[in-house]
Length: 150
Image (tube, rainbow, N blue to C red; front, side, top):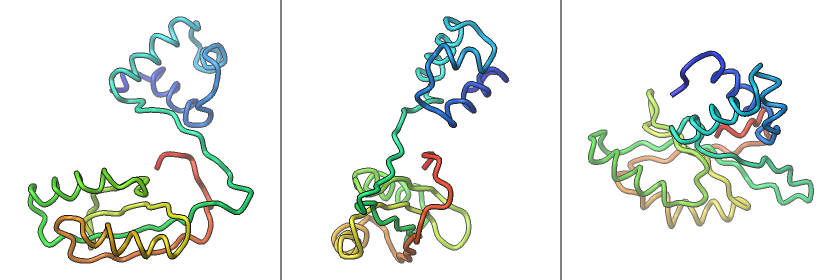
C-alpha cells in the first residue's frame, strides 16, 4: 500500500522509467539512495510493485496483433466469476483481464500473431472458458499510447 507522497513520487518516476538507477530515482524523489532503496523494496514486498517489464517495438513487422475482447458470462455468481478468472489466468495470450461494469463482464486484452492465430484461440480456448455466453472482439489498428500498465 502506498504510504505517503514520497511513495507516490517513486511510483510516478518508475512508471516513466522502470530502469532508472537507484541513485537517479533518489535524486528525483529527494531522498538518499539508501532510503529510496528501502522504500522501493517495501513497495515490492507489499505487492504495490508487482514486477517490471520491457516494452518492445517490433520494428521487423512481427508486432503482435492486439485484440480487445468483451466476454459476458452466463451468470455473475461468485462461483462463475472464480472459475472463469482461474481459467483465463492460464491462457498465455491474455495480457490483461479486467472485471467490468456495463454490458459485458470482462474486458480481455489478447496478443496473437495474426487473425488466424486469433481464430484458433477463439475456437480452442475462449469459447471453452467456463461460463462464457458471449464473446465480442475488436482488433487494434495501432497503439496510440502504451505505457505497459496493461
